[in-house]
Image 1: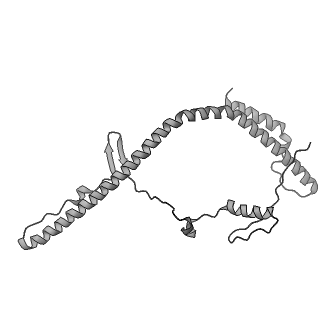
Image 2 (image 1 turned 60 degrees about the vertical axis):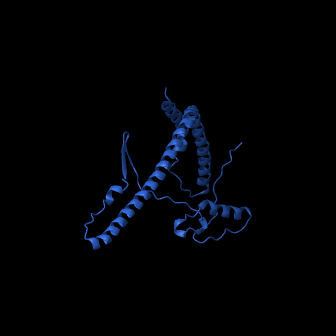
Image 3 (image 1 turned 90 degrees about the vertical axis):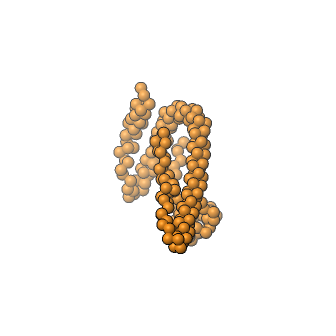
Length: 212
């Protein structure tokens, strides 16, 4: 029996044992104290069964997770070697391309300047001055080699050096930080803090305690 079949049988067994609970899944409306009690019992039972399902799932996955961990540990140092080499080569190519582009631009500028200097001289001598071949010095976007080709795409790189100076439209509000402010106020018995642009409310969540 494979792992999928074992999981399927475990699910079917648990679901069959909780058939009476499952039929209430779509009934979430409470209109009386009696229905409140029934819902509370269903909630407690569902939480218990949910944890049982999770434990069963984790039990089936644990051997697989240990195997996965072992394989990952074997590959990790080798992948790290390749990652370091790839990153170093990419950085080296970026530095090289930047330097070559600078040399190319300087060469084109010099060729253009030489051309205009000769044109000025030619005005006196009447000599014909051919246009320089500026296109030959342009760095190509794609480089071809024995392994295929390597293309150089333009990429926008961003480094945030002063977070407090970033304009508001580039910032995302943090619900977790706002929630912490509310939790602190709740723990201290204070009113919820007023934060413009957010609504902080206190809601009651049912927490079940298993009967002894």
